[in-house]
Length: 448
Image (cartoon, rainbow, N blue to C red; front, side):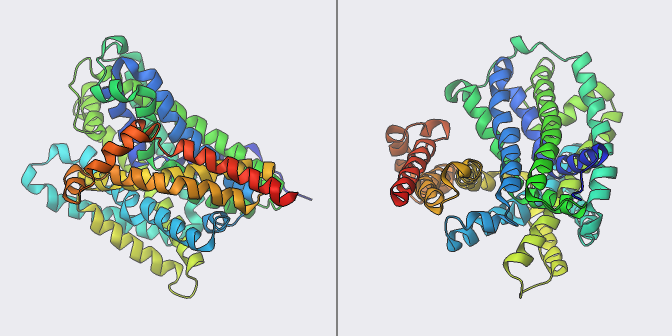
């Protein structure tokens, strides 16, 4: 008889999924967006929720529906070579190159750095990141314990901590949202579209293609075996975790917007959170913030190291063992983390502008696959039309100094004049739709 999950098991799986997703960027980016969007907080929040909640949910649904065992299998609908390239690029981005190092640097720079003299920052970051990744390594070497530690232990600590801060901000706001000025970038680009792109920084749509496998595996380990039941349980767990994320995101944006009634725009969301915590809790605010951010980032680091190591064992089965990959990726993350948060964010943005359109199209086409019987040609044509425009977005988002030095300024000027929606960061959208339609037409012709 097919196993049916209990309500308690759904809560634990949803809690695990939430714990894996909600980490470094999920705290700092919505707060800063609230400070900058001001009176336009609502449309900016809707845009942010589209990419930071809607797309990750669709990614979880896509993995549950696809009946594939990995992102590599899913992306192989385009081609094996593309699948290998995209899987490695995505996992390294949400792994040791950007997202995992960011978990340590956000924890340090938001919760501890404000209280240290400038000449001690680098040394203390080195010590903190060594302790952070040392303990992450210990948990990651025990992947079977991930449901227990993330779902049952770390998540409740985080939720209680962040709920206390949000409650103070809601019942005693620092200012009125309607009176807060809107930053120039949100006026020029449109608050919804700016919020949409800010959601990229969470990397959650990319992570959903990795974490979806963990959730499917967890559901199978609980005794569910039928593909239809696995898909249903995945969707139910996703609804639980994404709803919780949406509530916290909206609350953090509101917290950031109202904070402008007392404090100026902060250099980043971490500093803003520190200022808000000090306002409500005084000296205790630093402790509250340290607990919130460190627990949020720590549980995400463990989940990412686990997921990425398991994926690389699958991709390269005869190279290294799971434990070896855990050591390698933890070491790389430790090295990159000591470059500092600003450097990590600066170099991650162009990569995200390239990877996100390809992830979005893969997710959407997978969900729509019953319409064309999962024919490869639709995946291929959609990706072929999306890829060059994603590459242009990558080049356009490079740091200004680097872009000028390699003579790419004219490319950005040309793209703004000739590619629809390029100025709002979505120049890939219309080509992707065209590619999808052409793929559908070709399936009909082949069928005839």
